[in-house]
Length: 260
Image (cartoon, rainbow, N blue to C red; front, side, top):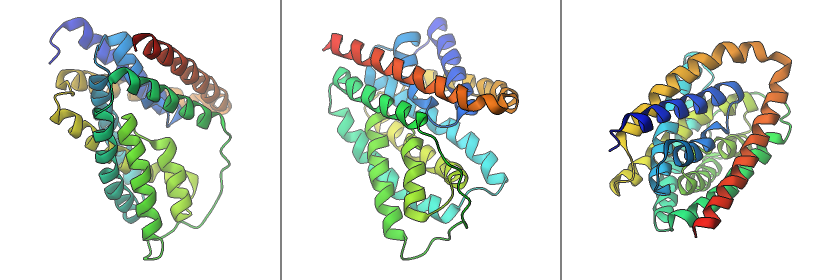
């Protein structure tokens, strides 16, 4: 467990950055947690970085979920089925990732980062639809989508919101706004499952998780008033953020290749 003050302070800063970006632009911010842990905090083992990141993502998602739940935006039956089947997938995916060399895993992680960045660059149309109710007919679709997305999220050690949201929309027909709120239960479940699996191998540092969570509280508090002021500039900010993710993805890939 990390006890040195400097890495813990850098972890607080990193958690604040991730939470700030998540608050401003929604999904995608969590993929920066692993690079920040590796190249800013100084974590040397990629598996530990992924385990700590997964735990932090789960805690941040729970915080965001509580706000959406109070506003009545979460469709709990669909969210629960997707999260339960996805958690089983996340356990499978994270177990597979644990068997892969850390630097090879980082190279694959860089590809996932690039996919997140590209996804954020794509325009998202706001579609008004009647919100769905869970039915027996749609249950298999939700279960299969959850298992598939959860496996990917567990393998890469990310929240997977950029996959969960379209997965929920395709399986249930819910609107983008509702899917974004409903996805947070799955993000929390997938992160907790992945972190728990990594913890069994000693790859979760509780001190770093606590430090990132502390920074996350501050980052969220700082991001809320900024998000309200962004207005018409939000789309430009999201585009710049996506470009940043793509640049970091290239950096992670270069560092991973150099370490092989």
